[in-house]
Image (cartoon, rainbow, N blue to C red; front, side, top):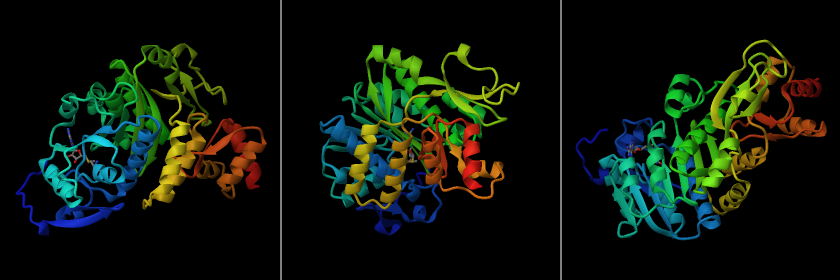
Length: 405
Ligand SMILES: C[S@@+](CC[C@H](N)C(=O)[O-])C[C@H]1O[C@@H](n2cnc3c(N)ncnc32)[C@H](O)[C@@H]1O
């Protein structure tokens, strides 16, 4: 971390705007490519992450916990995320805006002042290690946000020790997608205790590994989680999950939530199986090739989102004028569509290429054709040129051949 010579003269800064909020950034940082070596980190491409976080936290506040909230942003950098949130709602009892980098905390204070929030006694800025901050909380926060460089894995245990045990909202980002998506499988096993698989649907596998890890750390803290929204965009995954503490429910969910994805490298067959090694097929049930199947897991095999939560996010998004409003609406619509569908998705462009088809059908036309043949199909928010379906891969290939000829 660079501390350098701090000079708080305004000519060191550049004024920026995100949403309806103005904030300062270091001039040097503004000219550089977003990286750890910035004085204070800011990435404008992550604006959609902050937009969705505002929508998710306000939706949580409306639907699940109507009290005025205690919120902790463990890694706030310039503070733009929590400042935008504070400008969007005044239903906060306390907001902790933290970063381990002291230069970031100076900037947070400057940005609070710029937004007339510096005298607000409900806002506490600090520069602590995120784990220490969580462990030292006197009042259990309703909401904890973790947005580190790379993996969030080492912060999750203290977040569960700190957060409200019933209906707390954990917002966790991972940007180490090469690890979660199976490009670095050994690192994934080490960091997330799960084997990834670098398939054409690895974004979903990675998101399911992250939820699995968060959920298992919840379990060792006598808690369970319900993912409200699982969100992939621009090389990051962010999970919004609700806590619960019923031991009976935790135990019941153990056998239903965790499992494996098996994948046939020969024909592309894939399926999820429960966490019971005796039920895992030894060879592909589709092409019957006498070769061991590939697998990923253990990972989360239940739903990635809660329908009621997404429906409310869609309504709330309409009320804001975010730059990414249309993209958010599309992502959440596709997330809604994928809720009841099986794990994994099919990239239609790649499948058509593999089958050497003369053209690529419109996705809506393909979904309609699958529907007419008695199966379900949907879009997926993970990949706009892919579909999910409960139809087997061979039948899907046949439908593709029929509608492109
Ligand atoms: C990806 S940036 C956060 C970006 C910010 N949430 C935003 O939306 O602009 C990660 C931040 O985590 C901070 N950080 C890294 N390790 C930390 C730790 N152990 N505790 C608290 N903050 C930490 C870094 O200083 C950096 O500002």
